[in-house]
Amino acid sequence: MTILDKIIERKKVEVAEAKQQVPLEELEKYPFFSRACYSLKESVLDPERTGIIAEFKRASPSRGLINGTSSVAEVVKGYQDAGASAVSVLTDSDFFKGALADLSAAREVLTIPLLRKEFIVDTYQIAEAKAYGADIILLIAACLDSNEIKAYADYAKSLGLNVLLEVHNEEELQRSIFDSIDAIGVNNRNLKDFVVDLNHSYDLVNTIPNRLIKVSESGISDPKTINELKQAGFQGFLIGENFMKTGDPTKAIKEFVKEL
Ligand SMILES: O=C(O)c1ccccc1NCC(=O)[C@H](O)[C@H](O)COP(=O)(O)O
View 1: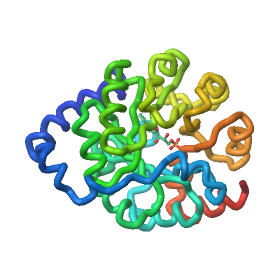
View 2: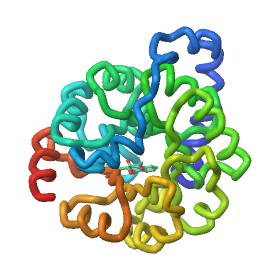
View 3: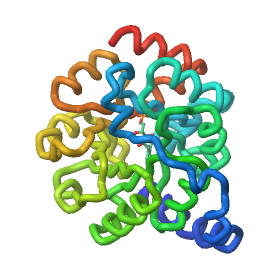
View 4: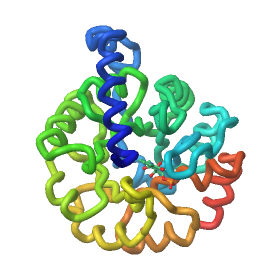
């Protein structure tokens, strides 16, 4: 069993418990549930911003503990002030030490789009994302079949959310493109063995339809790489560990952006 299988198995249990504790009708009454979402496309294409989707990531299966001390509100505000186009917050607790409370804390201080970084296996988690202040949800093709991707993306759009679909190879890409998808993220990290290779981005960029925002995800640590990915056709760049591992993610992103 891979880590990804374990995450998905655990996620199904968590979702069943959450539905018992807070039924959907309750989530729909949360104040953030009725807010209008920011557009991922507008923010990523805004020439005043960098295209960076900066991630708040305390820990990960591939690295263990990355940063156990930084405050989510301070870090994400620092990301925004440095020119990030969007912020990603991991809400998984068991494998990434995140929480839904991190998402709402981020929402309180941000005026740019906010991604709920989660392993979505049920529409309930999409409603939760909206209720806790997200503008964007992530659907991971490696964990979902085509029918699930379409159903979850359609439901997210019905709530006004942006949909970022994550793929790792051409097979996943070809079976995952629907009208309700806003952006494709190519994950350079193989979620089964954690090997990171930027060639996944370069190999897939021209196969992604141009109507979709193109995002390169994971393993980005050098500003020069952003310029190369831009040349190749990417508009968005998801970066977590490179900022979080420094202990001062705000300073790290500011220095990174100066080099672009
Ligand atoms: O990061 C991991 O170890 C990981 C393991 C299993 C599933 C997902 C995982 N990461 C999620 C991500 O997609 C990254 O957090 C994101 O792309 C940022 O990557 P990085 O800049 O390399 O931290």
